[in-house]
Length: 418
Ligand SMILES: Nc1nc2c(ncn2[C@@H]2O[C@H](COP(=O)(O)OP(=O)(O)OP(=O)(O)O)[C@@H](O)[C@H]2O)c(=O)[nH]1
Ligand SMILES: [Mg+2]
Image 1 (cartoon, rainbow, N blue to C red):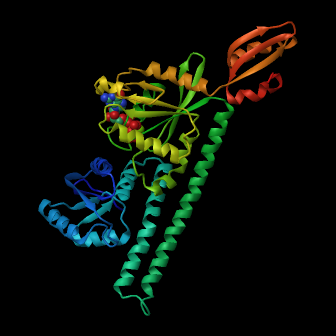
Image 2 (tube, rainbow, N blue to C red; image 1 turned 90 degrees about the horizontal axis):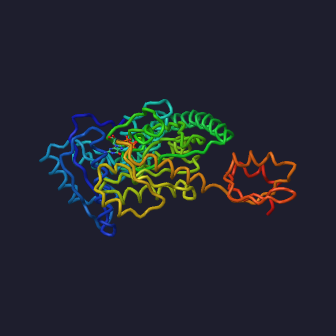
C-alpha cells in the first residue's frame, strides 16, 4: 500500500496557518520526523510553511509548491512527507508537481503500524484503518479524473462503474474485517467479565509512545514483552498478574502508545485494543521524565484520556527514565499522585507498587456496619475484604467503620447502619 522502503530519502514539510501556535507546528514536525525515521527513511531535510489559508487543490499555495519542487530536485529526495492530512486530490497534485511520492501524516503512522503488526488481531485492525483511510481518497481521485474530463453529459461511464466496483470491494472487505473484530471483542469481553468475577483489581499502562511502558511492565510482571527504542513497538495488549504485596495480586495491561493527532481511522479500528485499557480501574500514566517534549506529551495523553472517556478513573503519573534526567527535573513536576521510576535499573518500582495500593484504597467506600453478636464470625471475613478503620464493641454486637471495594459492598448491605 504505502510502504516506505529502506532506501528512501525524505523531505518533511510542516504546515500551519498564521492563526495557529508556531510551537505546536514545530512539535508536530518534530514528531513527524521521528515517525519518518521510525518508518525506515532517511531524513534529508525539513521545513515549515506558514500559510494564510489552505489551498483546496494542493493544501499549500502555488509559489510554495514550486519552491519545494526545486528543493526536492536539489536534495534528491524521493519522498515528501506532509505533516498534515491530505485529500486524494491534493496528494495526487503534489505528487505530479514534485515528481515524487508524497505521504501525509496519517499514511505515515498507518505505515508504521502495518510494519509493527504481528498478531492476527493487530493486522486486521491495521488493515481496517488503512481501508478507512483509503475510501475517501478513492472518491477524491475519481472526482478529479471526472473534472479533468470536463464533467457533465457523457462523462459518466466506465470510470464511474470501475469506482463503484472498487468501492463495493472495499466496503465488503471493511464489513468482513469488522465482523471478525467483533468476534475478537466478544472474546475479550468474556475474558474481562471472568476477571471481574475474580474481583482482581485492574490497572492499565498508558502513555506517550516510547516512554518505557513495556519495560515497566516487564519489571512489574517479570515478563519479556517486546521493548525497543522506537515509536509503536507495542500494538497488541498484554495482561499479566503483578504481586503488589503478599496478600494482594492485581492485573496490569500493557498496550499501544499514544501520539498527538492519532489518525481517527486508527482510533476507530483499534477499538478492541483500546477497550482493554478502558476496562482498567486505575490508569498508570507513564511519562518520559528525560524528554525535552515532556509537557507536550503529557498534554497529548491527557487529551486522549478525555477523548476516550477515561477522565474519571484514578491516575498515577509515573515519571520514568529518571536515571536519564537531571534531578532538578523532578522538582518541576506538578502532577499528583506521582512517582519517579527507572524501569531500566529498578529505581522507584517499590514506591510505584505502594502508589498502586493507595490507588486501590482510594476506590474504596467507607461504610458503617453493625455486626450482631451471634454473627461475630463475620468480623474475620470483613477484615479480610476491607480495611477496618474503627471498631466499637457493644453488648448486642460490634459497630465497624470499614473501607470496602465497590464489588464487596453489596454483600454487606444488610448490615449497614446508614
Ligand atoms: N534510560 C532509560 N531507558 C528506558 C527506561 N525505560 C525504558 N527505556 C528505554 O526506552 C525505550 C522504549 O521502551 P519501551 O518499553 O519499548 O517503551 P513503550 O512505552 O512501551 O513504547 P511503545 O510500545 O513503542 O509505545 C527502550 O529503548 C527502553 O530500553 C528507563 O527507565 N531509563
Ligand atoms: Mg511498548
